[in-house]
Length: 318
Image (cartoon, rainbow, N blue to C red):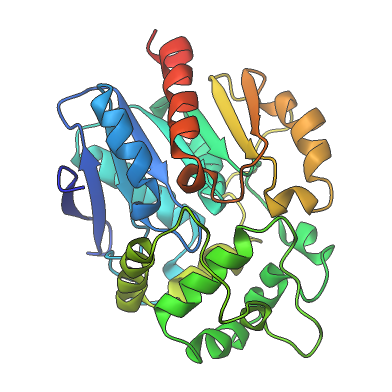
């Protein structure tokens, strides 16, 4: 991956944020938005493939993630902060418009960006999670079991103590093993989420020890403080201006769903994907990869890369 350039962009507040960039000569730009426990590295397969096809691929570490500076105050890690950071990064790189590609809570970042800055979005791709109207999602989480990992990690201090028992590499390892399964990660009353993983359990076959080392090194630098604030403790964050009722996003969109993604077991998600999201995003195509997990872009990179390429050629830059 030596062809990927790494740079730092200073944003409001003096934070220096890490940006991975490849294909800088192209004006056809995609901005990749990671989830948890991912960082820019989770898009390595897509960035290299798309650059070879003539596109520019940009991936960031959000503030407080990976190689990016954390904010001085944890409360300054919000969805609004991240979207403002992304605008500053695009401005610094002289990129007026992009196709957004989001995964996991990166989809929520992409959704927020679409609503606040529609003039800068040509289209978007989401993975695992469909477009979500920004706003209070705490009510959705409250309907899940107390032992669900999101419920647990929203509780101040609990995840810090849980993660603090382990090194960063082991935390990432455990999350990748848990989240690549098809069942919701739910702990018993007197059990912690990390304890759901047998220490002898192997990594997913598509996730190498080298990959784990890369993730572990990045989280060794950043820690998990910001990662726990956003997304898990920011789910009740609101837009400054409420989203108008009946608003539609009139850009092409693609949703890639892993058929074995555990999030499909969450209450109401299948109904939302099948019946509701197209009311907001009418020009949406949904593709299911039957064997795909929550980490579909890392597990099945060739299939995902081809889906993105086909979408770009057919709907964005014919």
